[in-house]
Length: 315
Image (cartoon, rainbow, N blue to C red):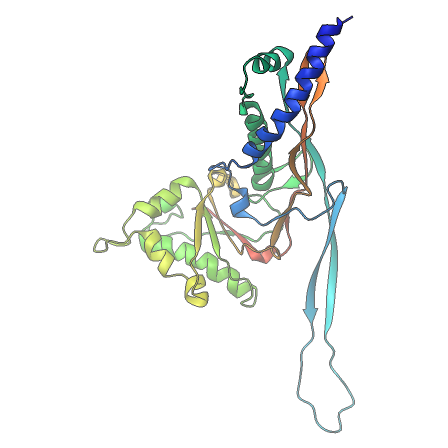
């Protein structure tokens, strides 16, 4: 049985810890991790009820065509809208941190001393890493698919170059430019000029290749510099094409080949549901330590309009 003074020390330590945690959490949630990419890759929706088991959404498509008529016509063409219902499962995940009674009491000894935020930051980082994995690669344990491995997305093998190879390391700059623009144009043309992709994702090595290789022997511009000024998205909209790296694309294509992804970054096309972003709960005492539980609730990545995304393999 704990002595009265020990119980009092633990209760005082808990009160001290509660006041510390508030400040710690504010600082930790202000941290931005440079290598966590998912918020920049896909739209994130946090609007659903935090404890919902599923998120329901609908996609719609319209049909109908207007035509000429004469004064004696008795028929009328009608427009209609087809709606399809989808449900995304929401799962819970957990990560927290803890302090020993000794650590808290040591911090209380010195006026103005605060507990380190390192443990909370580590927990927050671990939560972000889980979300990153789910968004990009999915999770087979929960039946989630990610950005790089959707089964409904059109998959195309890039054409061989003049040298007989589809690999960018064996292609001329003009052939690499053609691969990227063909991916953008192909998605645009197969969707009746509706899905104009605004984002290109490349494996790290391929991004490095186009960022450092001159467009031609007589040009100072690199492949990527030329591409940013000369692509169908920019020429049509006047807005810049987004080109990013994604290391998980190395070997993600058919037969273990390297994959390029192009897509329209829009909630109508794809969306990641996170009804409860990672959050910490009040500290709890457990024997001689204090636990700060943390959890989040998230669904998989929904690709709502598959033609809004394109996989291009073999680069």
